[in-house]
Length: 332
Ligand code: MN
Image (cartoon, rainbow, N blue to C red; front, side, top):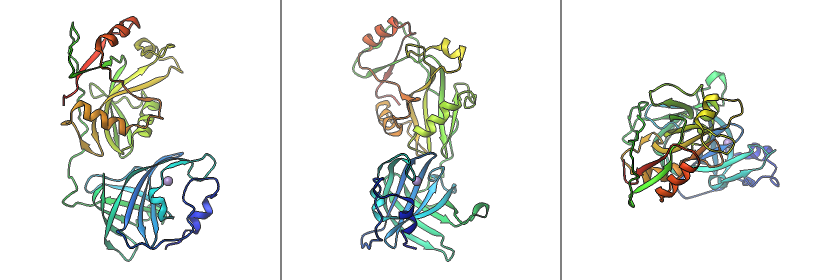
């Protein structure tokens, strides 16, 4: 253990902003952990625990399991230098792990148990992660690199059932725009209403009537999984086709011409990190939504919020659109 040779061998110190990994460091502080979201060729999360002056590291293709008893593949990778715990940034093209590294969670941890086979049970104290996880050298498919990360049942772990039955909020048709400071306005997107579920990093699109739209819009589903900064979340939005002018067009969608750009206009967030947030206000949910979605993923867009409903309505009519949506900022 505590060997950074493989780490250094994989990297060209002059060409990547990552820490060089000169040597293992001693520390007397509390032990730290970090989970980095690594948007590389394949999106994954990197789970790292401080140990003997380095970071023991595993790559999680499906993210951290969040519900008691859930498990996910954890591919053991080379030790990383302790400095890596605060690293976030772009690893340039052509370098090992090229892509974007973001800190998804960090904090301290306690070692609860260490097994003779190397298995570790740790209690994490992070901003998102709080509770007990076990790392098991399970050698899945006979490969010693293939460990399992298991969320333990403890007092913090929710035994919350996975909810796959959210219902989209529906609009009421009105002749007049409601006015007042507590209203916000949005474009009325004209396409297919779709709830976007991400479960263990896997995306699924579900229609208003509960039909699966994932196969119909596979690129949109993939883009959602890439954009979401949580392996367990549920968003609400509309899959739309854009016409030549970039306007949402239902006819462009129905004609389904190859090459018609599709976007997923997302306007609400119902669950994040496995926790339903239906009791937050619309404004609070939208703040969480802004933090959730990676804006570089252009197929998934947050539907804009407008204060001047009349101006938005006039612009919509002029563009030949159906109308606008009015929503109460404080609504649940
Ligand atoms: Mn990585």
